[in-house]
Image 1 (cartoon, helix red, strand yellow):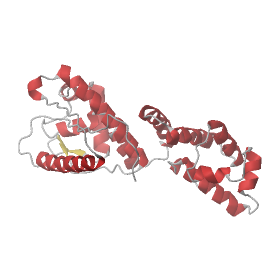
Image 2: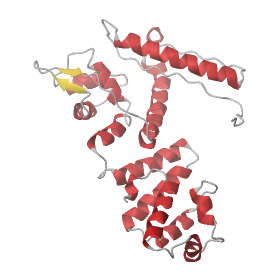
Image 3: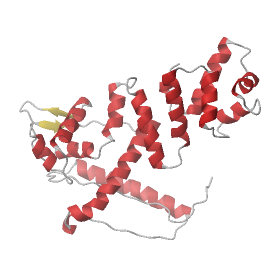
Image 4: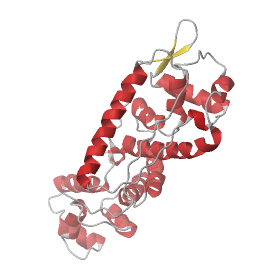
Length: 274
C-alpha cells in the first residue's frame, strides 16, 4: 500500500493495521496500546471510527508503531492536520503541503484538475479565448483580464489549458476552446474548488474599484427563514445556475467574460439537523 494515495488518516490507519495483522497474528490493539503508550486497548478503535481526534504526539507514536519512513511520516503528520483543521485557511495550508508531497505520484490529468482551480485566471483565460483571436501575444491576453495578470501568468495558463485538452491551436494558429470537463468529486479537487471560490469572492470585492457600476451587479438580502425554505432556495439557485450555464453555452456573440458568485449562508447559529 502507498500512504500517498490516502486523503483520510483514519482510513490509512485502518489499512495499516490490517496489513500488519495479516502478516503477524500477534499484532493486536492491545499490543499497539502498549507500544504507543495508549491509555486503553480500545483507543485505536475509537480513532479509526472517528470517535476521537489525535494529537501530533499520538500521530508520532503511531508512526513509530507502523514503522513509517521519513517521507511517510511527513505525509501522515500533514494529513492529520488537514483532516482535523477547523478553518478553511488551515485546511488550505495543509492541503498545499499534501499536494507537494503527492505531486510525484499524481497522474497528469489529476494534477491538472487540481491546478485548474488554484488560480482564478485559469478558467477566465479559457473563457476569454472564446472572445478574442489569440495566437501568441501573451501581454495582450494578460491585459484583457480584469484585474490584469502578467504575461508570464498568461503563458502558464495557456500551457496548463493545452495540457488538459481544454484548448487547442487550430490550423490558423489561433487557440480555441474545447468542450471538455474536469471532475471535482474527490477531497483534493473539492478543497481546491473551495479555495477558488474564496479567491473569486475577493475578486467580487475588488470589482467595486475596478469596474464601473454600469457593468457589474451586486445585491444582498438578509432573510429570516427556516431550514425548509433554505433547502428550497438552494434548489432554486441550482436550477437558475443550470439555466444560466445553458444560456452562456449557446450565446451567439459573446464579447466579455463574467464571474458569477451566488452566496447563501447563515448569519445566526445553525443547529445540526438529521
